[in-house]
Length: 123
Length: 204
Image 1 (spheres, each protein chain N blue to C red):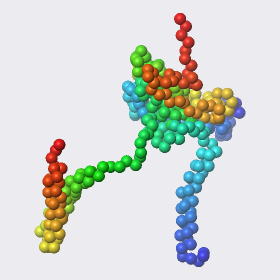
Image 2 (cartoon, each protein chain N blue to C red):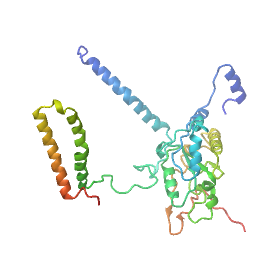
Image 3 (cartoon, helix red, strand yellow):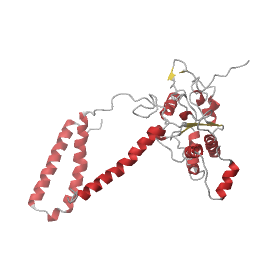
Image 4 (tube, rainbow over the protein chains, first blue to last red):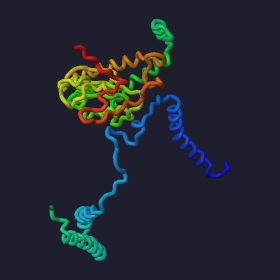
């Protein structure tokens, strides 16, 4: 086993593990031996705050927020892709232009859909 | 004191350092009092000024204001404690790890101050939690807060680790939880914690 080329790696791995875990273990032992423990229900609460935490931490977001995602894609992400396209426009082949056209048309379709749904009107 | 002060100085001159566990323990406690980062009213502005370069709280090892009660040693009650806010203050104090200290800063925190007659102001936070140092003033100047820090450090330094007068966290019998008051119909309930504060008897 000692002759294995991976033996030195194993030694280093164990040393690295010990280097990380030893301080944690020592701190834990030190805490067990010397820390002045005065636990109470409030101190052991999961969340430290002046107010008691209420409700569930697993908050669900309304699926209606997908509208914001679509609008963000159309107006923001599209611009990010359009800029390099415009810069490299003169050197592009027909295939690249076609691909870009499909991309833009898909987003235009999304825009038309959002427009038709009345998302763009400021209520 | 295991070694006399004079002998200690003499030994120090010869290059021999003598100390006790108690001295080291208290030195560690008093040199890293980390306050909790929270302010209640105008006194908090003076507290902030104390931490800035001109007054430089870092000289006392106390510049590390912690945003969590679990990492803080000191609670500076800096300002008016309303009855609405008192339960939160007591709850936060409960969540601090031992050893923990309290400085009541300013007239409001120690007695209700100019709002003492008000229906919604707590007449001193020492009704619910044990206060180590009171500073008068409205608001106290940063120098006064520094004075409070030094007073607290002296107090910690003088505490023996065993027997009478030892700090609360080393006393297994001592109270560890301070009941959080709740909003009653007319006032906080209870109106004070009898374990830390006795209602003064009014002699007419």
